[in-house]
Image 1 (tube, helix red, strand yellow):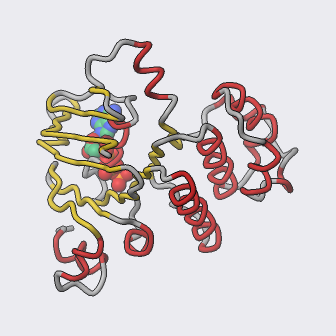
Image 2 (cartoon, rainbow, N blue to C red):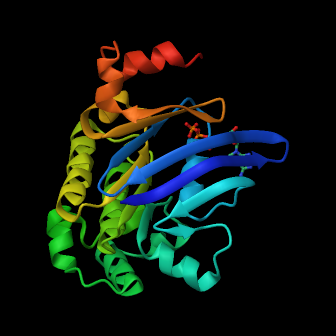
Length: 239
Ligand SMILES: Nc1ncnc2c1ncn2[C@@H]1O[C@H](COP(=O)(O)OP(=O)(O)OP(=O)(O)O)[C@@H](O)[C@H]1O
């Protein structure tokens, strides 16, 4: 089943034309990595899928809803099925980890057991820590736990593992993979780590010059004569 369908997507910031007719599709249960050099438009693309950024042309359908002309009610109901990891905001600062999870549980009207989430994400040792005082990796873990609280159909993650140590990176990926396998949820993420794409993603899209220069399975890319996704990237994208 199609979860996201994008056709001919255009997005400009003033006179800066960032996305120039991008096509994309995600089906239920797929893990898709979006790659491209700095400034290629990856975050812009993800934010459009998250329904938090407008666009100038093309069609974007998320969970069977065309997102351009949705009423606020329909948009809110659509957003309930999508989890995103956003940059932590000011208000996180004054809350402890456990309080934050309880707050989002009530916000999402989630039936998930906070204790179980806390165990799954191994957050117990920081239960009483203020979010603001945690290291970057721990903040990422808490943000992911929050994302999984709502049992979303779709998870969109912008560079979820940037700046994390290798163990933390593995741990985050194990949560993503488990969510994907247990619930059959769809995951779309950006990363600059080509090894992650190779190990964990079913498909990969390369955004270059505002378009999907390549969108294929990682297996197909590797069997087309490249030793790694990193080799592919280096051969296709100029500095
Ligand atoms: N709100 C904005 N206003 C103006 N220009 C913007 C805005 N957001 C992004 N841009 C520009 O659009 C282009 C694409 O940015 P975007 O953040 O989508 O790229 P990216 O591929 O995610 O980059 P990176 O890998 O560095 O995170 C960049 O040139 C950026 O400067």
